[in-house]
Image (cartoon, rainbow, N blue to C red; front, side):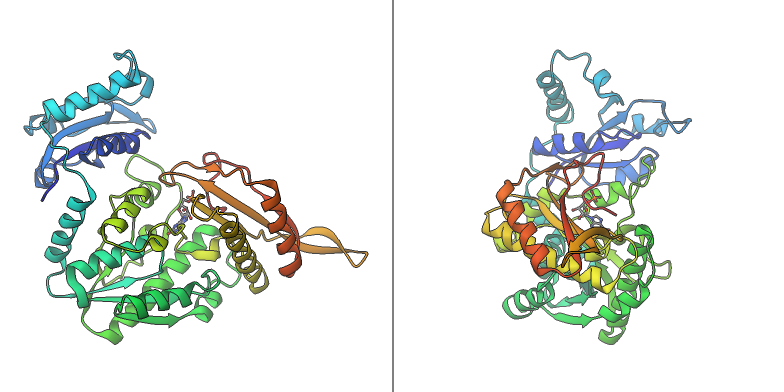
Length: 431
Ligand code: XMP
């Protein structure tokens, strides 16, 4: 393995990820592990140079006192303990610069870590790890065409070539034109081993009448896995399922010390009887790092800088129980938004932009008569790592043009709203 690592032990501090990023920005790889990791597990990790216990010793979570295993201190690694409160942990320093300097001193002088974390080394390490895990067996990949699955596909193609089978499932919740693009780019241009499955009817009938967002995610996730199992059976001899799980998915699905924010289908919704072993080569990367990785792998910019799209797709943007007319309204309004953002030069500037349609109607007037129709809400946000986000201040004329087009071109809609809420307190998606 090519990169040194600083291990952060998680005692429930919400700043763990900030700290991991700070260390990675210094050029040193850092990963977060649960507070109760054993000395054996710790020693099995590759190239550990030092440990940071973040959250403070004897930290209390939900009335329970938690601490690391006492023998961690005797493992032979340098240890730095930081109190869980940011104000306190910085209090012995005059400024943030000095605090950062304290961290640098620990990482480089005390731990003697090398600044050798970069995408070239990450890719080389992952290729080695994939080869070691997979051997000469076959891997099935859900290729949605988003950044994450595309980067995973590129990594796996480099590592194991034709042992990778990409399956694109059209769950009927894709954006307009999206499945067609996947077939064009991966099937024709990249000559990947690609299987296309149109499962629209299956998904929509399973989701019929289901309003709870977590339930919707679970149904979509479970149906996905079932379809992959069916494809695997047809293909024969597939042992692994590759997934584009990234770091925020893992954190937000709940660690031992953090409550579940929302379950992401690719972490939380797998059925118990799943027969695949998982390959998750980008599970430790933040979103911006995934893009860097894609560039390192030579993927085209359009693919690397494409906005993220959730696994459950338009299913979590057609709020509540999905109906065909509202799903169509989401898809058509989203297509208009994307077209107009591209025309205004916002497509490469804004991190994620989409529309949602709530499951209630608002009053309007059509042909001089009172009418009840749906509303479209536009969301456009910027973020580095999807953990926090701020709203894009879209020019008024652009919003008015989009509104005008949606009201004219999308059926059953009589209102368009723009969401001004940052994350937190809101999340990026509505469900
Ligand atoms: P939230 O709504 O949690 O979204 O602020 C953060 C990022 O995650 C995406 N997202 C999902 N991605 N499965 C996914 O693969 C999901 O269930 C899911 N829910 C949210 C969201 O689009 C945003 O980029």
